[in-house]
Length: 249
Image (tube, rainbow, N blue to C red):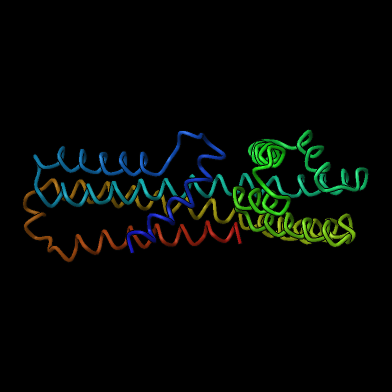
């Protein structure tokens, strides 16, 4: 179970490293997340154990919420570049008639991080460390966005079989354009929803913090009430994660 959870976060990590910074990795973030939670716990021990434990756990949940937002931002940035990439590729292929030359040419007109991913793998291919098929698969795996994966693998198979890549690309671009319209409509709704959920988590944390400072209130609060507060915040993060996932489907 723990191994699966770790693999899940390592899969998410690559978006942050690709889009934000190569030094951004899960182990460091998790360490900061744990450290921040422990510091909040220790600072609130002067009030009472209930408040210290509750705020420590809520801090951990809020930082996980931030992690999910960062990952969603990185995925969205990669996704938003796809139509431009596919259009440039189709135009270049119509001129060169070769997928490999087209990848080189397309890199002159696209932005990072997609550009860097493609160029770094083309370099490995030139050095003989990747086969032609592995080149396309590795680019797809590093970007790890369904739109890119489907497009690049279709290009590879079409190039190998001699199919009309320009026609294939045109059809994919038309379909992706329609899907992007839907994503654009969802994006505004999801952004507002995430902002509301984030505000609710902060407000719940603030109210809980104030309530747990009073000794009389603490005596009247049962452990079930605190557990309910933690479950409510965790559920809010789960709903936010589901909403963010809609933008990448």
